[in-house]
Picture 1 (cartoon, rainbow, N blue to C red):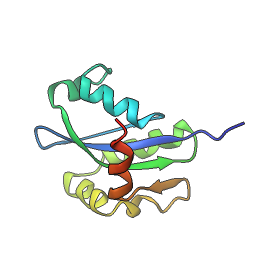
Picture 2: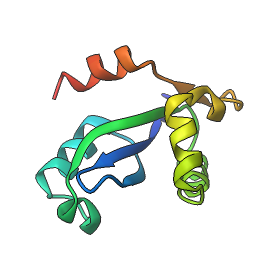
Picture 3: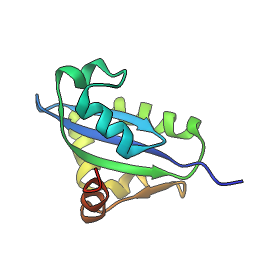
Picture 4: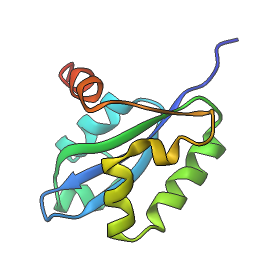
Length: 110
């Protein structure tokens, strides 16, 4: 049986805000935010400009949801710190960070 994988991500939106979410398919979810076709009303109003940061979660959905809630509870300043230094969230071995170069390469596939 293959191990499940989730993504926790932060989007930088057109109004300068950050939107945090989780998914099991980052490319598909990001595309739905761009197209306004997902269930997220926020990004239909404030389109994402880019994925500011993302983390691959090699665990279950529950853990990804917990991490998403933790990020959502952070102040803007704290979010900017983890965007600049994603390894701050990678203290748990289930959380994998992506470099900007790898993230950009991954998103170029859209």
